[in-house]
Image (tube, rainbow, N blue to C red; front, side, top):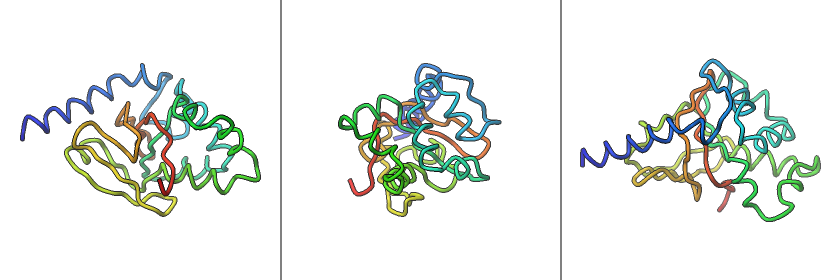
Length: 166
């Protein structure tokens, strides 16, 4: 059992050390969640969506917050036209709901999750399933980079956009 937890912890550390390959940019624990996301090479769609949804101030606030940040590739996996449609002003409420479903109050580090299955209440208001018993899954998404510390929380990069109610 101890070996299992060591392997899970090693997987998280490996994910964290491969951050430059996954997120790129000049990330720093002294920058906010939004500032770090804006610096990351493959979180440009997320940053555009956060701006369109009017959530920059909320994600730049004191926190702490945990953000499960979908990559550009994750957004590209959505059906054609979905992102463009969500970015339209008339769909702002739906965009806010999706984005806030990716945010959990508090700073949840990978060590807090290792070996556990749980659900966490999101800022959107519903629960998201987290399974860290074999790798780390958040809903249907896999964490590809963990523990990107920010001044107001932490970012875990995921490979799939998670949707409320799915």
